[in-house]
Amino acid sequence: MDKSDAMPPPTKSQEKARSSLSSDLNLFSANGSLGATSSGGAVDSGYESRGSIGSPETTEPNVSASLGAVSSHQRLVDEAHCYRMDHRRRGKCIIFNNKDFDASTEMNPRPGSDLDAKNMYDVFQSVLQFEVELFHNQTTMEMLQRVAKVAAENHHDRDCFALVILSHGREEFVYGRNGFVKLSMLIEPLKGNGCPSLIGKPKLIFIQACRGEQFDQGVNVSDAKPDDERPTAEKSYKIPTEADFVYAFSSAPGFFSFRNSTRGSWFIQAITEIFKKHGTELELMQLLTRVNRKVAYDFESKSDNKEHSGKKQIPSIVSLLTKELYFTKKK
Image (cartoon, rainbow, N blue to C red; front, top):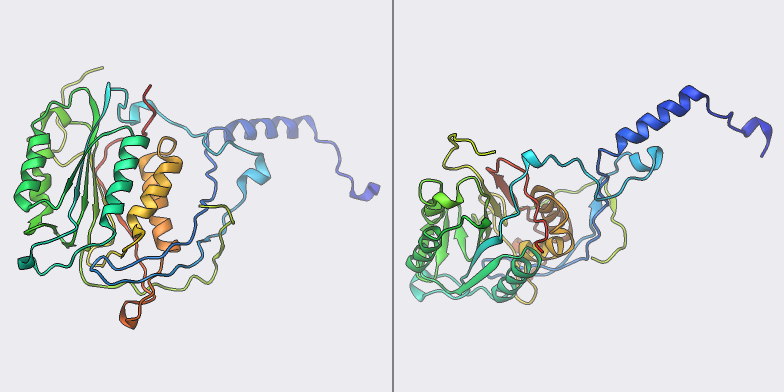
């Protein structure tokens, strides 16, 4: 090296500043980029479609390169701000898989829904360690009765509760085999005044269903670049009765959800991949944000009907949680 190119040795003050900066950096998490495989999709109303696009990512400052490498799973976690997940049992998960419907509803069958049900069963049982109950083609009354029954159970030794609904839907409704029911009616028994043993515990609601008839046309992202090539002490106080719920909808309000007859819905495909990879490592909002990204960037419809081709989808997260939620592994 020529002398003119050599860097002078750091002074003591520079070394001290660098050491301090390195120490501070250990408080932060540097999340790796998410590798994802391309997938096809189909409209959840029954239209068959397929297709994919590359998974882009926005350019961000390379903090770890300039300041030193940080473990991808290092993070600042304050237990006071996390839900207790050390009860004896994780909790109950109820899955409603409504694939076939009475003729009176004029709703088409939902091919691919059985695969969605299997995937969600595997994720919640094998990865997240829930006790899962799966019910097929339930009437609205059966759905209401099953939720009321589980709400009447004693959840004191459980961490949380989960409900998964795979069906047709509209903005504020989901379909049973024989008609539709308002989502708020279905959820009502799980609220604090209806299920005391779940007060202060997270209640997770996952809904794969259309929320309207609009299609998302998508927009071009001009500054995106391709993703990498990896495979894919007790106190007495009041809390709101609506608190500690999180709703993960497959689409934004007013929009269609897409489903493939052989691979299942885009939303459930994404949940399956992300939760199997990171379900016991990342916080719930991180998991759901990655699900949003995968659906938004990795899927695009292609159909013989031009009106249904080239369409996009973005899931919607509505969080009323009051703490962070980590699915730490139970022994």
